[in-house]
Image (cartoon, rainbow, N blue to C red; front, top):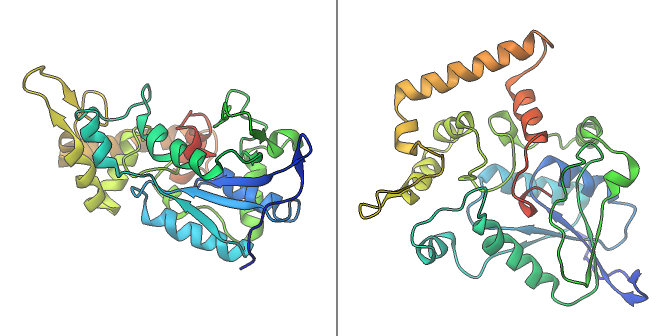
Length: 277
């Protein structure tokens, strides 16, 4: 594999680094493929929380082999359980997102330091409402090649298919990259985790708790615990509801699949910022 070295291209005439942050998802991977011959000595980084799916790590290995590069894995100083205890059992949610801040943003900015950096972000031209991770640090300049070149969702899929990489395996049951306990998951995705990675499902369930003093429940899903969701009748109901959604989509396009539904819904959702670059 070729060694990644700082590129002499500069911000304000100072030598700077060119960095592409991979999430293990489709957009950042397609961007890496798209930029492979456009920026020499690009650095590739992955914020590894230690709470990722095995499919994500497998996909990163394929990306390294395809590009012939090394992806630097950035790990947080403390593991997730430490921060759960620090926040007294309060789990991250779409409002707080402390997991993104402590497990991804902090290691990423530590990795960059004070060096001048051009950061390549995989937001597409058909995502006008997404900004992704844009640091307030003055030494980091974001660049959006897909937006600049009009690359949209179908183009991303074409880039991945033409390369031979295709989509990550988890897209057959999940809509996004990120931790196995991502609170943006739909209930159908939690069922997918239960069926494919029961060890991780119950590991996520172990983080949930009930506070007998306040009566407050700390759960990944609002108003439903993972123990409740895992009950056979509830699983059947969730699957049936999702099948109805697929049936409705097939009336518009008879070739639509479960994976298509997940990818489509992922394209319209705002996930954690740096998780989905």
